[in-house]
Length: 254
Length: 305
Image (cartoon, rainbow over all chains, first blue to last red; front, side, top):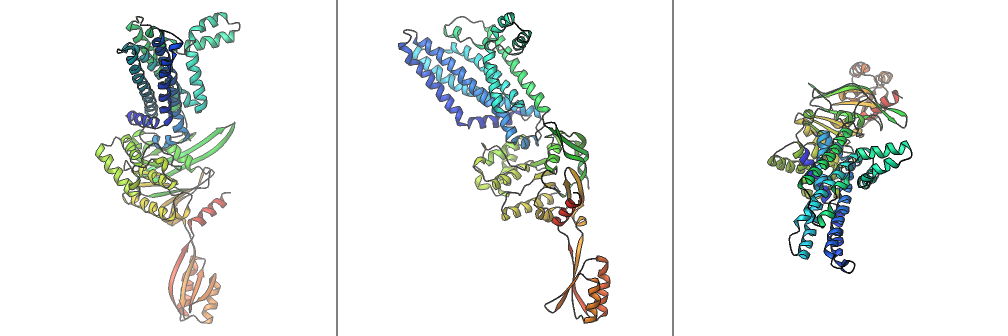
């Protein structure tokens, strides 16, 4: 199996791009800036810092996931480096899996760096280990994997710019699918009903991965709920990868 | 010799914006193992399309092809294939060492073998000193060299080289030609796509010429290149002998006290030599001049307009 060497090369390529370091540095600045909100929310500054920090990690994680996801395969196709690779004993499915793994690792590595920095800052402020925050971060990680998978899928069909737009739209629509049943019931035309229904049943409900408010307020969250959400996310990520393999298998690389 | 590449009515039609373009038209071809096979044709003739199909980058519209007896796309066959693309776009984020090591891993070579082969290949293509240089800092010529090195990392039986010397200076071109001959000497087959006819003529055993997707000429180079004239150098010719020779020759010139006689038709050679001897003269040399590959190429292309 050639998945691992391809994933490693893909990871190395992403890590040598300076843009990712800029994103990580920016995330730290955002998290630290939350400490300045004391004047805005008296006695709530720590909670506010955690809210802002977790939200910043999601936003910046999404940028990394979409950038590395859309970049990994479209770059190979555009630059024709895929020719050199596919001339070797590499199955197209191995290529897609390797690219997914590489982009996924890059995204998770960046999230891990942000997590370590964030937890250290919170630990200093709270004077205790804030491991309870990991519940929210783990779900963010799974959500990012869905976005990596979707970005890769879009990039097997469309150019990178369009893939990026679709992936961003998926992220935005995925967080409002809860509202779609209401939209379906109120829709005046059959066309709107059908489109809203397709979105509701096909797209992942990314709001399931948002337990940040519960975690920050230290509310009890059943482990089973977290596990089910992880399985739900992995299934969606797998669907994206399988669809990408399907597209790449039938594609000509002239 | 065993057949290493075989195609049967291989065809490719591209459909772009409701317009069909026949890139390859019923290509039936056999390449024997152990030779350097020159694949020629003007731009858009279908050379790269052929390679793209043989290496399974694109699917043929119809027709079939086999490499080492296995249907194209067979992963096992690819273990014994090397390929250097026309445009050497590689992973620019890797150093030349990392690049070769990466492909070594793709072929599941162990660490020691990878290290040894990487060292040997970098030495062979003259990039030993640049082993820690990122490929993004390489010149086009250096990229072509590293491209050849990666094509040989698995010690393949069949190597596809698509315009491997297009961007090299004369010294680099000679080095790569020598390298290609070395690959052949190891019993490997080289499928050599090039626009540079003089290079093809110098190193290829067999050539195929393609035009507008169709195969218009194929065969061993020494059989394809016809004798276009024969040069006879003679001395001691009197005016009567010269008059008789002039009737058969294309041109007779006096050069440094000798006579240079140019004969166009091979069948006239025995008569000419006979006239020289009977006239009391003697011939010093007989040199057949074959047409060049360039002449054959243009004559074939013009014939098929």
